Image: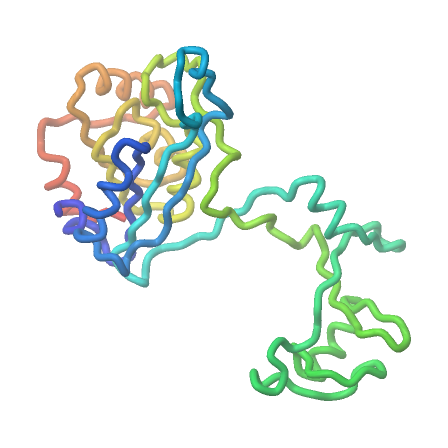
Length: 272
């Protein structure tokens, strides 16, 4: 209840858990944050395999964690994230190359989905009459800019250049972020910085305040410092606090430690 109270209207909360507890937390979080504010169940594939069958296990390998995402309102901060296209996708979709420029491109549909029922305009363009996605003036503008591929008698297609595309939108299965194997910190539940970076980039803006109630080895603090976010955290373990202190000092970040209730401080600041 405290976390819901201190969250700003534009804020989000990410609840990281494993298979032991995720289903219980989902039910509780639905009550606290309300079901309509449930955004995603993210599956983080943290390992490729478990070989505990040699020890006699009689179950499928447990290689993922769950991250439940809730928001305070429909006005939550959202910055879409992208990952590079894989080679097979590029070869299949962006297989065309312009002779003059060497730019790779894909071909997309220019016809209007839903036709007349969706209010798409109907007219003849380059000898083909269809319901089109764009107005006639927009189509001729695209044609003048070399953005339309066409052959006599065939339906024109839109050129989508690879160098203008941000990449593949991140989905709810995260299998591209590896766990922290062999970390010098030797903290048992240390999370990779890239995992926190993706979360922070998606749901906050520079200068905003984030609160980590279970700071652990301080990965969220490191990511916040590097990404110009303010950070409040709480941690019950003295060993963890010492690790956080050394870790942040090593990157030039001064941190204030206090026995003052972190939730109260977060409530005063309002967290993202």
